[in-house]
Length: 365
Ligand SMILES: *Cc1c(COP(=O)(O)O)cnc(C)c1O
Image (tube, rainbow, N blue to C red; front, top):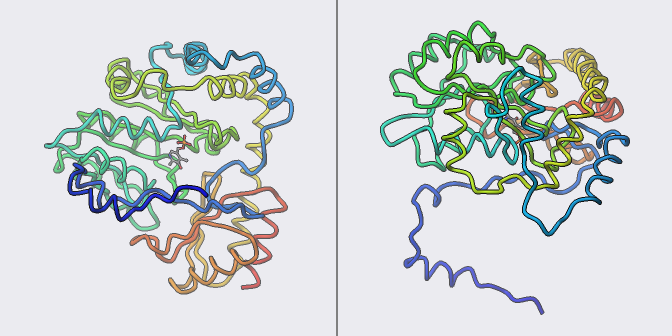
């Protein structure tokens, strides 16, 4: 018989536990964990790594000494730096770019300042700000989720921003911020401006070139989306040394494990093999958008990413569609509980076959 730990006992004792009040109201992150036949809810790449890539990773893993603490991460960092014309010291790795974003919220804020980002955007920005016991401020996007740089700057000044986070292309809207606007924000802000380019491979207009002019501009990237490596949790930031030194203070030693480092370095070395796969997703994006546009009472937000956000007639319809798709084994992302997106669903682009199934089901609704 397995042991049953009584949670009410914990409650009694909790008088003794010193809990941070923030944590009492925070809801732990959950996502659909049941495997769905058609998984279109998490913006992952729809198929496994190319076999050639996976074979190299597995061969390298057989040569790893598992008893030792992790390998140095400088080999991968220097390769990434070289690609972007930076120094190794300007690249820092994290367990997913999520870990880096969370660490930035700890490192670059205090009681008197705020962390400012647009909304709707990646929901975790607000959660990381809360986790750091900081004031997270979401600046509402304009009609059709367009970014207004002047409004954004006004709020960030008023709220005394010590960290700004922008997402380009933006999740979940799929919309983009022009590099002119990114430059305007970086130029007129006296704090780090983090540009989350998690989906940049699907848009290809990175603002990395602006970093030499604006040392407060830093860029996060991930292996989890276009590079089909979500399982390994690996992302990175490109930033001035000063930002990276501060960031590294809030992370534990040996933060990156060897298994992920090896996997990511092989993917990086073989990244040319991913070009066609990425182009395939972009082609599917155009096709699925056109199909969705044929459906009555839908509004499609044109996307520059690997997902499409669309608006249905009303909240009831949103929920009905979500549940109907789910019954058919297709899971998408339901935003009906989000105040600014409560009539919206987001579908990640899958394989051609998966997208066909999705279109067939949603068209017959
Ligand atoms: C998926 C995602 C990330 C982070 O992914 P990691 O797997 O933690 O690297 C960051 N930002 C946005 C907007 C995302 O959608």
